Length: 98
Image 1 (cartoon, rainbow, N blue to C red):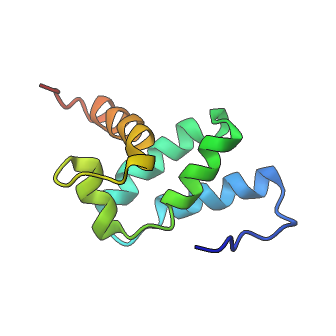
Image 2: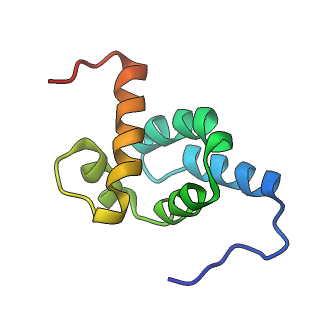
């Protein structure tokens, strides 16, 4: 995968782009999972986690949704961030975990 992020992108522009991509996915379920998480968490992430999330945004929703819902195992490099996002979404929607 090649980096398509413009080299002149400011940190603020990057966060705005990532928020927009979080809210404008291919399926509404992913908008409602990633959008609120991005609004709340992006500005608190370190650069390594931001880079990882940026790569996650390149993934297809048809892959992301089963990973985050637990229907399919996710790639090892995404486990921690998807756990964080999933926990945030469950807490936000009041879902009970077992």
